[in-house]
Length: 415
Image (cartoon, rainbow, N blue to C red; front, side, top):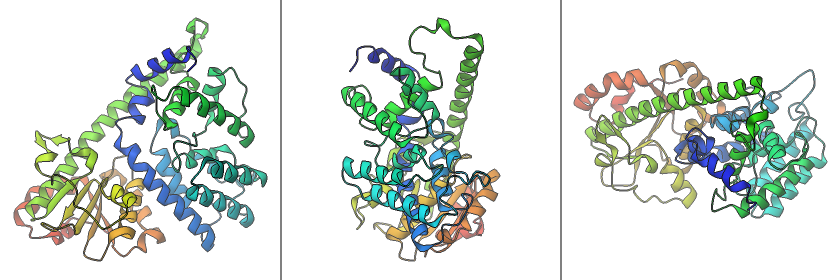
């Protein structure tokens, strides 16, 4: 590792408001996103193959994937912008041009199935050779979630951070420039894995902080007053975001607690997401309500990992038969939970389950729009939703008068 880089990494890790601490580590939403986005990308490929992808970003399966990515905030906040259909410029040219659409799908499919670094690079080079107008390295932010140790995400801030840190002049929008940047990132990251991670999201986060001037590299005495005010405004915005995230986490825990309490009262075994077991609400620890561990399911390892990240599961007493699956969504998140429940439906559903989204009242319209998607309505287990206010208000009554999961129909809503 270059000696000058170590203090920069240490500063990055020591800042409680840096993306390293607010996004990369101790963030179950980040971990949940990988499987959900992978499933979404498979849906994009299938839609293009079947000729149902459409001629606009809005309403497409690609919008669904990019929304899941932008829910990660911060590093991926503007990840969807390059994919918006710009009719006057005819870019990115993957909506009206069927040939380009297929090339895009083929690249995604090859990266999905890639088992080596060379296979990923070949897929990118092949896509680049078709010179699809407006479709550049922004795609890397999708590919990162398919192979996080081999594909760094890319956006303006990351590129600016790279150029500043390495005194370079790489240009945004060129796959060739991206691949050369990637080589430097890979080589540098290998030398500082002990300080960061094999997951390139950590190094990309470092570049993002430098590119947005939150992390000052070198002597900051030459920063203008205007730039300094921008940095301070960004820092204030980040602090406010952290406060709001904590408030949402508390609300998320409250809804999980209600679901665990109701499940036990109805006679089911209950389990929260494996990384939420240490949580509590009003002094009641989840570990005192849940099973010691998730029951063994007859699924492959990846599917089992996905199931263990579902916010709350109800099992038939003493069995591994899933009766209810619940995803609690935050005010800024809807799409990833829908993808996880959809994935679960395709994986284990046999017809006796109930699937619910628990959603903020203010997001009801968004939920209804998403549940109307043909791909969601096609799953064999109908997906319904319950509003936060309804669950909170009726929790005690459901526990007292309910006999089985059907009692939830009294407060659930469907499209």
